[in-house]
Length: 151
Image (cartoon, rainbow, N blue to C red; front, side, top):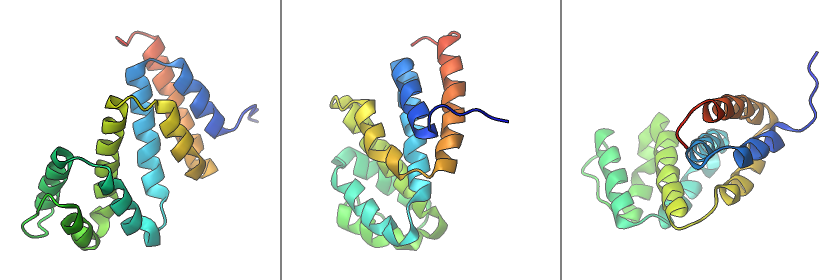
């Protein structure tokens, strides 16, 4: 029998507040990737467009290079082009969104947006089961962080 005192979502928040910056960034990255996995199919294109809206030219160029590896034609580092070809990526659409969201997250961290704010935005969208999986990963990350990482 398992005793649970706080929800998995709160577990993730508490652990995020208790670990060093690098471990916290890793945890936020895991939460964002889990969030992308849970976005309904019908909402993927819209979310991809919103994510691209916040990317700079360098990020768009790197994303276009990734698109080129998917052989969707000659990619252009342009938001409109990338959104237009997004549906042609098939099963790789979620991976493209994860990459774009990762770029957006890095830009946000560099601009001083706190990881706590990113968690506050994304965590509510995770199902309880997915949050429980991430909470387990967070616990492992906490142990890694506290048992000797250079953070």
